[in-house]
Image 1 (cartoon, protein in one colour):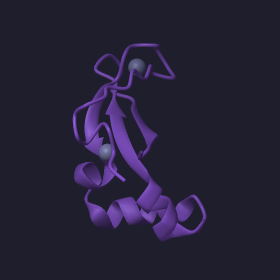
Image 2 (spheres, helix red, strand yellow; image 1 turned 180 degrees about the vertical axis):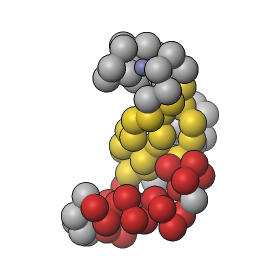
Image 3 (cartoon, protein in one colour; image 1 turned 60 degrees about the vertical axis):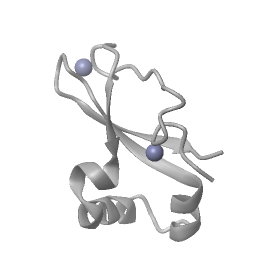
Length: 78
Ligand SMILES: [Zn+2]
Ligand SMILES: [Zn+2]
């Protein structure tokens, strides 16, 4: 399974929770924060079949150019 965003054949329009500006895809969370902090972040969500969930989903980091808000968006692969 592949992530459509990582492979560039799909764009996802996500709006900022704060100001409704269209967010910019800043790439995978692991690219953005580094694998270690992404893992930490993931841990706080609760250990729900970690590896399996990471296998089926790609967590992207979206950045709001207007207010600087960062949002994580889970992209389902396949
Ligand atoms: Zn991806
Ligand atoms: Zn915003």
